[in-house]
Image (cartoon, rainbow, N blue to C red; front, top):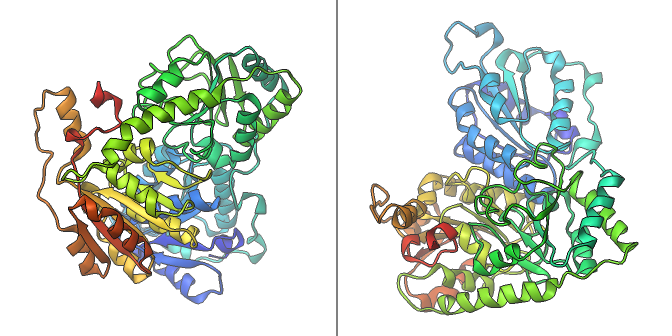
Length: 550
């Protein structure tokens, strides 16, 4: 606890267990500045730590007990690690003296966590604890950020530690730390490629937002009149109301209009983006053969999916600042980005407008997007689950400010993420209005955390798309398997009644005429609130997912 305090940890999320008794006793006894949030399961503690890290720029910390606690916390670790988000998971464990004697909850935690984390260890010797915590924070915050794991055996928790060893390295209290600067030759080569382009395009993944590169990116865009597209994780790299913003590209949230911008480009600049299957529609857009410039802090990403003409291994912010400086000293051709972005948005809005204005029942998801844009402040934070909400927010919700305002779990897409993530985001950014948006499948994964929400009186508004189906899978069966629907539907739940039973102010909306007024009232409520929207299922909708449209 003293080491975490020294690293400026102010909030942690977790769940108690038998092996955690010494740790909780330390939390109770010691003079520290850490607020601990008790969750209803360990998975959600990790999701809270994840979103907390995303909005604060500081590592998130979660904890849980041995056995089932260690296995429950895994989904949050793998999501954060593969999303380059630094969270520290502390799981307590059986005593080292009990190993191999079949004690309750024994398992090999280090072996379990090894493939899912950037770094992990078991602190079998208390004397190693301060050095191990420092090593953990170095791993969390440097290079490509990720998840780390510390196992604390029961007897280690009670053993003495030398006071002189308890100190922190302040460089690693936030991320990214110890940033890698680009090589000058690589920056010159990138500028050379851009100087010969006539219709270049930048596609930003999560890297620019993680690195705080929004200002440098905007400078480069305006200097070259370079259009900026993003992945789902890259939303916030640039305000989507900026004249050079194209919006999201790819199979989840991309549409014909944005795909055409990618396909018409002669040079593609990937920034903090892995160029994975969703972003590139299974590596078809951009098509192979274009000139590729790739900036990423992870050398393993560079050249992994495309023949790369220029690879820049560096922090996104440092690389973009260097590229701005290099281009400022050259005569660079404008890339006509304003017209290309404007045309894309005009086409998107022409398709979106009639659907958003529809008064059909069940309520169209586009109507929910429009109502939320009407009632939410521009600095709101929205945490969305990967089912029904994600493609609609990615395609249609137009973010008016750069920075971290949209959070969704794009690495592995587990249901039940958004409610816990919204709590972590609200703790980390207490002055913002935070929403949790989910389908009813995700509601079933996470509804126990409404008790946590009420217990701490966290003023989040939850919005549920209620259509009584695992919509993403049913839409896949609809488009690719001859409408042979099998085991994807379930009974309708009165989500408002369930939330109300926990003490959440709740509404159910079936009439689209009432939608905006109810959402406005829920957002203004001074406490937890929920709006259950009886909505159109994905397989009947005009969802912006290219494989279904095709």
